[in-house]
Length: 261
Image 1: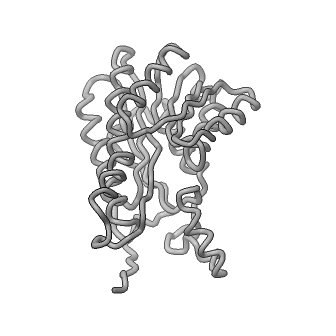
Image 2 (image 1 turned 45 degrees about the vertical axis):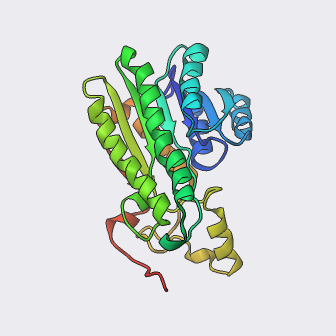
């Protein structure tokens, strides 16, 4: 039996990168997976899962929309009889402009997806989990939310909010049996970070990507997904309100690359 046998998991941002890797690993461990994304290619993720003998369905929608997140939880209940795991993974990077160049409109959209989205996941998933007395909610944060120099200001602020959200939410859910945790990835090659990787490789510097961390490399989506598997499973039954950095050790120190003016 897999570590998630008989359980149902909703994963947002499941069309690519970390979400796609998580959906496949969770399904391989026995979970019924609802793979959601704003992009309709979440259906490709589901096709891979079902071809391998897993159980999954794809639902397209906006992870920062209240009604849609509520519908994801309802679909898990109607399709599979309940909800055990919700991974609020969907996120956007936004433009890497300076603070002075960023607009209130850009901040609003980044916060809506990256922070309000996880809030909605906690709110609606916990309502479904409370009657059963257990559940695991996972949010994707970032080391950009832990320290500076790892992301633009709006993105970093949104991820810092996620880190605080899991702390406050787990206490709000005191005594319910529901655990709320986050993962803070370091530099991972995903669709969101691909321009950075493509640019470095085009300049012949692909071998230098990730060299700032003690592991001297960048990470793969599957490495984040396996940390999520730990948080989703009973192996992490005493882990609550925490943010686990999966970053090759980058956040253990304080290398700073000053911005030139």
